[in-house]
Image (tube, rainbow, N blue to C red; front, side):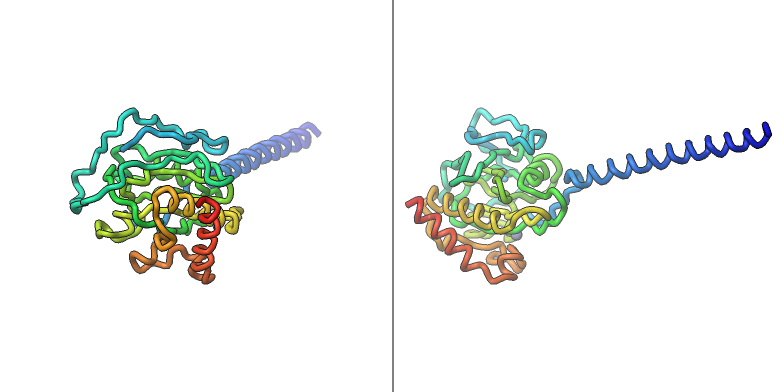
Length: 269
Ligand SMILES: [Zn+2]
């Protein structure tokens, strides 16, 4: 009888240990999923190939408090990456706007730190607004996470000026500085040298129609701010062979995007 009880107790102890192990495994799995969902593994598949001005505008958002920390520079000295063979630029746009809202959409300024490859600090003339889509289908790959990616993860010549999602916009590089998004190197005039790169988010759960409208609002605002015309609206695919912005192109909405920009522009002028 004692023998039997001991065996039963041993079985009970083993079952208890196994339940404990299962609980730990489940916890660890949940943690891994949570970390992945948080966009820690965020990979931006974009693009190839951005100092500093006093910053106005919002610098934080509830959803991205950890991703937006940067110290606003106190001077306007431009540090140019000397390793790049810059073409002679006869004319530059002297100042960048730093909006904190376009129409009803909040804009957060979260500039790529000076000295990173994505922020060469080269001033140029603004001629185009270059529309892109991130092609990033990762969960949580919204505007705030792309700001985090550019500021804290990327070590490449990859950058753009704004990321737009269905509820907010992040501003990564002053508009009058070069960023690396159009794949046309130092061509003058060109997408990198003269374009403001605008990325539309396509992550799961993000409302693409709202993103489309928000990007059109930002584009109208920028056209108005820099005295451009509707013809300044370009796509990444206009500067190199690339199907970007893919959703807009694949659904034949290029003209619709321009018309939407024109509608918002009329409200500003
Ligand atoms: Zn693109």
